[in-house]
Image (tube, rainbow over all chains, first blue to last red; front, side):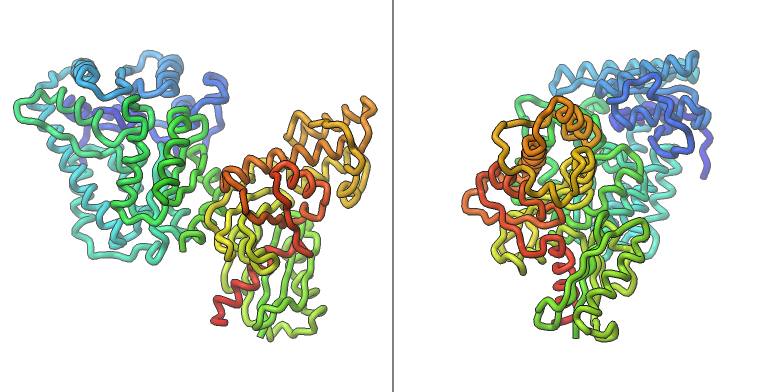
Length: 352
Length: 262
């Protein structure tokens, strides 16, 4: 089933994907993968900036992108804002939109973000000459939730070790889903769930929970497997956070439902409630325990200030809870994570 | 039956052969050089010749170190972190904190007192404070690497090096020489710099060293000046086994013995 829709690029898991579909588009996540191009972003963005953002800009500079009808950015962190600023310079004349994303989750913040979602719907409607009605948005949220539900079921299969291909394949499914219409993802995942239980290449491995920001390369996930780990859960913006379910309350406007759900779903470190400074760490700990993880591996991008700011609390929380933790730093490439091989293997040996 | 542990590091390839009762039959430390397979063969040949054991009597081999995958006929590869923990427990039982400074990286390993790793911290991103760093500094001071070990004796000033980057530190040493600083003062400063850098790794895995037995492995442990500086910085004596560069290989040999059902 190939549904032809013009694609809108996006770069952040906070992007309200349901709005893209409601406006007749499909989302295309511009991932920091590939690498057959020279590093050029350094001439526009300074050296000490998030490698995710720089690799995405490299792709734009080298025209390593599919045909896009526009781009939607989230003002989720300073690096993303810089990416938007650079993008409109290097691809002038192409439709681009940036949404402000509140850093906290309060009623006012949700109301504000709902207005941003409505602004996005209006802009995308203009780009595609359609009106994004509440009905269309509600229908799109329904399809998104179907995808989220199917992914939850595939994750269960991956966690129990019956998904053929294991965690690396789950990552491939996430990557594909982030760049195709919901209907295609639904058909694909339904097919996956009808497959006979397959062999997990990591069977017998030490059970670990992974968290961090951007780690889309299935080869990187496979490296954990090669090191003797079995990934039983994740919290990445290129993983489970991308398709977290949206809650729609009776009588609630779809834009408000989207805003409330997106802000309340498992957060990136950039979302922070000063009254609950331990929230991220405690949430990760609870989820790791729920997965039966024997240890947790955090993989964060170099120069990611939001994560760097939270890691001391994560480290301390895990230490007090007796949950072994390994922190790695990378740059989105398999090469950088390959250098961490001894650390990962030693961590796995420690947990055996 | 005998068990072989091979530790292929960036500067040296170390081999330890043990018998079924874990007695050390022979050890060998050879330079890795550019052709690490040749270094492996030489280290292996040396321990067999020294012990008089035939290759066919080696029941199992475990490899470790950054080049562990390069070793043939192994039953397993195990990281140097696990192997150093196991090897140090055999050499200095009861060690809780192990500092391993090798040719190109350094590690602080927190042990449970029985050789099992509880936590570790590792610096493999730059050569600062490692064997390569000391080699570069010896070159700048125009002395042999072995001489560095006691050149800090008699130093009285508290000279410190501001940079721990190998390249910048070498420039700084050259500048200090040009300023007429005494070699022993410069070497003592270098040792303090290494100790200071290692201290932060040790604190990360074990914030409170009270009552902890500390030991050091790796080739840099031969440098008594560095060991003295570390002991002073940590406030706890740092023990060094007789052959600190064979700790990892011994651990690998012991693991080979365990895994072979002994």
